[in-house]
Image (cartoon, rainbow, N blue to C red; front, side):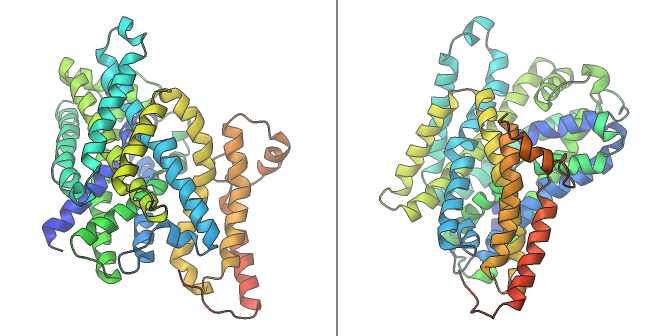
Length: 444
């Protein structure tokens, strides 16, 4: 792997991560954090950049002779759990929720501002756009061997240039001064941002994108575990640096925008208004290009990752057939609209995400307890008990008798009430495994 190839794969990983949610969240954080922006961003970067980077390294660490991924790690609990959990994750972040959302976010932010109110009353604009969006996705994802060239060599630089145009303008001609912190950011800037970064769900995306990087490396002739791990570390840090730059820059735009556009309810509105202030009518176009390119790169990555996985475990259909199938299905789901997708997907992701985090963290230290399944099982069971009820609560399903008890858990209000039970269950599992008769180390 030459320096140029490592850099190209790192750019590809950066583009895969940089979806619309990653672009529209930092401006909202900037407006809220104000003068506490620096400490808020440190907390956000820990969970929005640090944990996804660890997830990429976890996938690399589980890789053996060019194979491996989320299922390899999940199978350390039980082989059946490994398949079931991996399928659930891929379907959730893939054709059920994640992939359709890339099109609906692109439409809402990149297309709707250019349509008249009369046109918006019709469902046809969304239908036409989803067909166009996923047709491009199919064309660019059909040949995974060229995925690095298509995303890493030209799509990422274009995306980066468009984002930089907004950032540079905001630095040299700022919209205003940074204001005082608001709401939770006044006294809890670090911890509130830490939780907000966790809610971006990028850890799940990293567990899915990891196999894309592995296959990209295989296409370059890198198959042994050591070289794969080194290459993925380099790619991961390049992506992390890119994300850090974008997050800091966009949060600065938000922090300096209050005087010009007032306090807005979401990052999309902040960027839309800030773009107009910075570049006039051209600002809306710049923002539209940014969002559509970001969502398109994420869509391509998710479709490719899902197709690669399912063509391996269910080989009756080829990779190309799965690409067409997932993209077509996502186009149909996308026509339900962004609001409906968010309402449906968030509860499911609230249930899955903590399990993915715990599974990832255990994979780094499981040699210390000889990968005994009891440690995994207890840790994940405790996590699942809390996260499932978190998801049901978000879905407005009445589980008051249980949630009234869960509210006593530390950090429950911050949506990480599963953390302490997971740690306690882990300790119990280690104790049980240490006092039980030693068993042969499992290897997956």
